[in-house]
Image 1 (cartoon, rainbow, N blue to C red):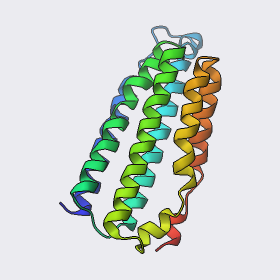
Image 2: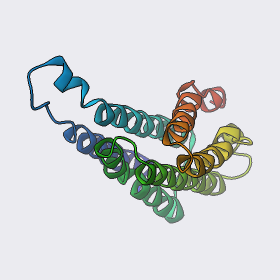
Image 3: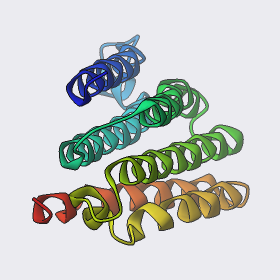
Image 4: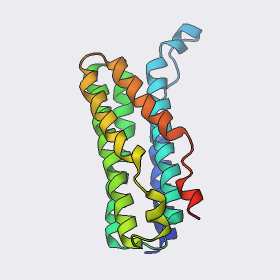
Length: 189
């Protein structure tokens, strides 16, 4: 399989994931502003999930662009990442439906940890496949954000049992941290 085909497949899966999330947004049952406002948990969950999937898509794109080639291990690592990302619509919907109760928020954090670790495994596998002196390996460097994100998500999971709002603030912080453009791959070209 070529790198281009892997990118196209991944883009398709991520587009489907985002589509599934938006389909969870239902019109309010009333015709007042209060009816719309009552759906804020579902909408906020959607915004968080969409942002996270979008961040993964963006970084996945840049990382694959910097890679020279792929192998079978990269294919499996990519599927591993897509598996965890495919769970975001379910846990996003669960958080919204329960107005961000403890277990849904903690579970969202657990899926986020696993997606973060899967991304890290994919990056490691791509760097190994392309060589320690490759443009990709140089761009990845120490990958501080990639290493700290699962730790922050883990803290969010634990703190969800204290107050789910704290966990959501941590999840939001991680998203903001990644939302700030990461120029490592662009500098490596």
